[in-house]
Length: 291
Image 1: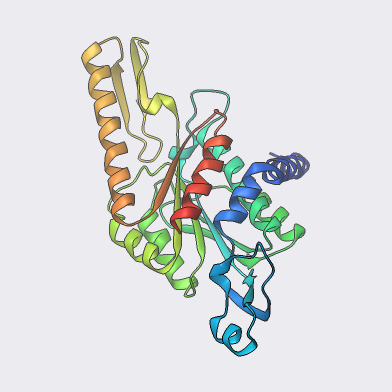
Image 2 (image 1 turned 180 degrees about the vertical axis):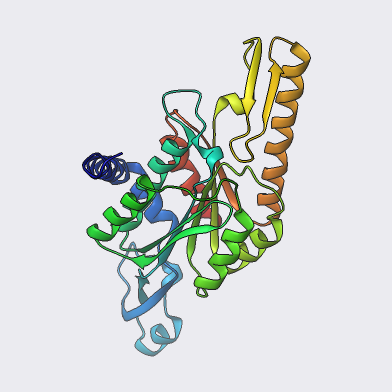
């Protein structure tokens, strides 16, 4: 991809992310992630219809009339988007692959966070962390983040979620909102996951392709492992092979769900090439209620 084509894709992706985030996603995001606290503004006299839970009973007793406390949200918040750039994310059986779906989710979340006046940082990882952009805000910063994602050229091949989470703990001491976007083709990251979830509001978005969970009958097929380069010939015409493949995929899905749940991490699965925005809106709203 040349520089002109990359610039065009960056602008189109930013515009699409802004358009989607400008609707229900932005509203759900704002509701779920309002900031990390509240700031006292004033005490004023009660007006019928006000929330009685905000009444300041000490002032009310002194003044002889109901008064309540008013607060404002502290809007300052830092958002870190962690994006899996490993080779396994390049897989796609349809017109939209996992990496394209992840980039789209990324652009929507970046736009929603920008509208929310949040500071936004980026971590892209493979086996190791390959790119870190410290948190910032503004349109030029958003465009830079999207440019880094769309123009990313991986050096590593594998997936190192644990190393990426360890890196997060080193660069972000203060509590942040963290979106981890990955296909989670990795293991042995449960301990760093629990540590990161204790320090931050960690949200997991797993991107998958339907062919990773079920094989069609295509006869003999030669497969190459995208991350280790090994080749394997599979007889997809054999019903038992397809059954075992689906069983293994289900096991991986259940194990991932249990690992995230035990760490207290909310999780949304996103199928590449589908309209996942209604699910994303519902997910953000539910996450906000839990928080």
